[in-house]
Length: 167
Image (cartoon, rainbow, N blue to C red; front, top):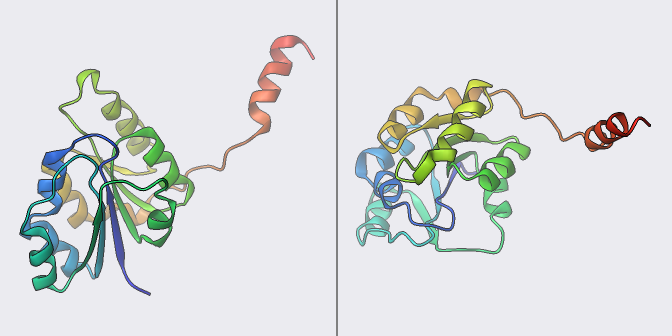
């Protein structure tokens, strides 16, 4: 089995995130931790021209693309997911019980991503960081001891409604 890292920036631009994951120190750290494959969904953010040659020179297999209709296959293959803090990406990774580092885009207005990432970080379900803290989050490996996200309870909402309706 290969040791895969899947990175997703979502549907918008997150150029600072792409710059961080394509930097030589970040890539060298992936290799030092035993990762051999890197798959990057980069959305509207351009990837540096040197990214492909740099990963090749380091011996890291790279797949990069803008969008797919579903990220599930890439997430399932991943040993580690490094994601933007979008709720859809977070929940999909958590439901797959994957090691997860969430990188908050601090440039967004009324930073709801920070709120979600921080809350799930405090509950121990993921590691949340800024772009500048990504290398440290990877190095500390706290993502290897996360609390599994609970399975959804389909009866919970129905029970709530029944209680409210007096049933």
